[in-house]
Length: 239
Length: 280
Image 1 (cartoon, rainbow over the protein chains, first blue to last red):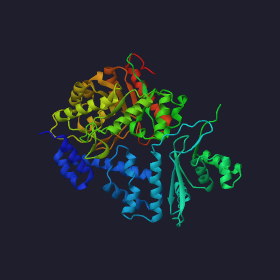
Image 2: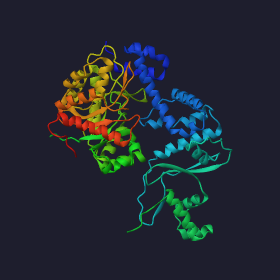
Image 3: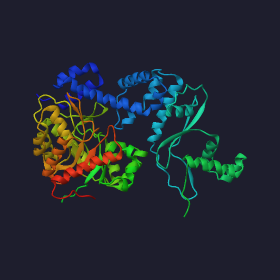
Image 4: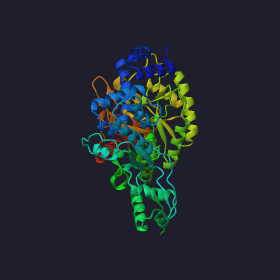
């Protein structure tokens, strides 16, 4: 009797999910178990690869063997359920907390990387701005962490052996750059937070200066700087 | 001369932004976009739009799950159709396989059993997909496969022919996969090429593979080997000019190396075609 679609799906799925099901699945399907194992490696490798790519900083902050052991456990617990491959890595940071793996700063770093993944696929449309109009970057996420993650993350990204940071509450601004849609993040500078509030509240530079007691040029400078890094979007000047 | 897009390469992040400069992609007539890399907002979508502004594009997906038993994902289909519209994609393709089961996305191309039940199932789902994609041509690729289920009533060629007869689906014929499958399972690659419904071939894939000794893996990580080039030429002798894409996904080379392989495909085609393949 030819094998049915339902049987193929059931046995291939079992072989991919459970190593101990592989010999039985191979027998039921009439296939070489070593060849069936190729698919098991591929399927699991895709999820593991997505975790490695999206949590590269967290991996750099861990002993390699320890990180790989966590990835293997995560792949066992979290099969991919979405056609977007990266989506299967989104639950890695909360899972680390759930299983109490890694140190608190390492888990916080993983949460930052999970947040960056969310910013990468934020569906907010870019606003159409008239000349002179300004708006907040719609992909902007203001993130709060109990550790100063940005300098640590930057050091890890440069391949430096950086020690775990001491606790210190910090704000991180993560967003896609409007010019090339690349995700970037910065430690929140007070001037940038001020600029964001000015735009959020719809104030002119003069109104913001009056409200904050700062000179107008200082407000304009903060706004220009925030626009320069992509936190604020500005309508193109009229030609 | 039939209408053909000519010779293309896959759009890969490592080659951006150079590939958006027409002067740096001589011989590249079109881009193939890996559909799932360009659906979400962000750099992937932006890259798709930039590519489409430079050359015609075609979409090639891996997540359709045409052979799956889970329902087709209407959101996914709508997003693919929208991307095709936005980039004016000339056609949309995916693989003749299942890539999900029991609510899980396997992100792998698992072969469907070659049975009448599968033919019925695929026919229904191809119809459903074409309703969403409208007039835009839709093609399925013959995937590489490493397992052969027992007691299948059809061999791969007979199954493909029946599927084309029943549904009119177009084929994205991966010549390297024909070579790999025949090597792995003991088939005659030349007879496979000779028996294909040539009229259905919409696009060709060429690629390199990795021979592990006991099995050949379709890695897309090397130049194509001469026997694959010979099969390609044998196919062209039957089909005439066909849009041809060289796939290179792993151990991605620099752009000039990729373009050299694209040129190699063009030269191979020119050697057997009486007319030069068309460019846009």
